[in-house]
Image 1 (tube, rainbow, N blue to C red):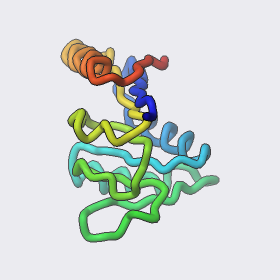
Image 2: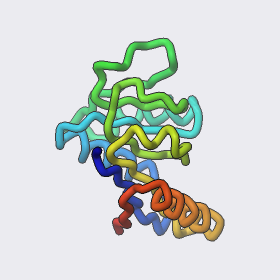
Image 3: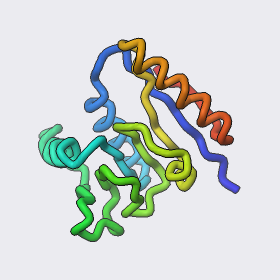
Image 4: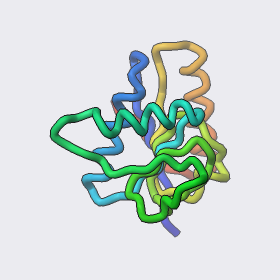
Length: 141
């Protein structure tokens, strides 16, 4: 059985989008398939557009899973629904997800948003939930 891990990235200011791109590039460059889970289709469309333009000297091949396109062959998929359309082993959370969905991944990347008290409390609850579900947990600055 593979040990699942949940890694939290500490955010001291609201800059999650930048981290979504950098982490996606990091995993993609390491040969990993990535699923990015976003809050809604509007956020997914914006992220899809931004991945085409975020760096002039690089490109991250990706697709937005709107339910109408085949994403199985895509190395990076953006989705608002809890569906692993590209059989990824890595998920980066732009929003919280259910533990049942997250259990299919080897690596879960979540965010500890310490710039807001309510978001900090929610992050701590998710961290404890991951531990209770058997995930190895860590915090990255």
